[in-house]
Length: 62
Image 1 (cartoon, rainbow, N blue to C red):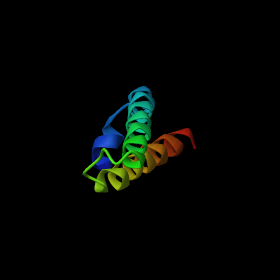
Image 2: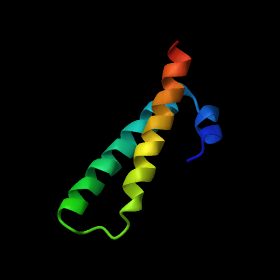
Image 3: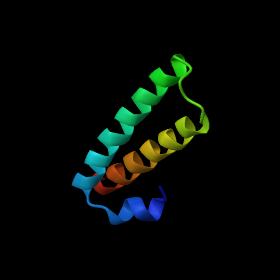
Image 4: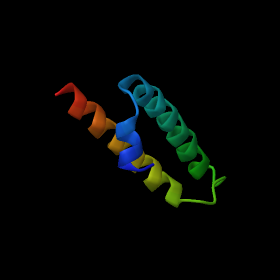
């Protein structure tokens, strides 16, 4: 997800999206532990999305 797309969303939408991505990341980590995943790069992308969303939320709060 690009930063421009994140900035267009409202804070409520970002909170909801953050929860969805974090749960997806959690299930991905469990899949990696059990060797069920093939795309290990997805973890990096999900963590970057979480960081982008948190950055925008914190900018709006300040």
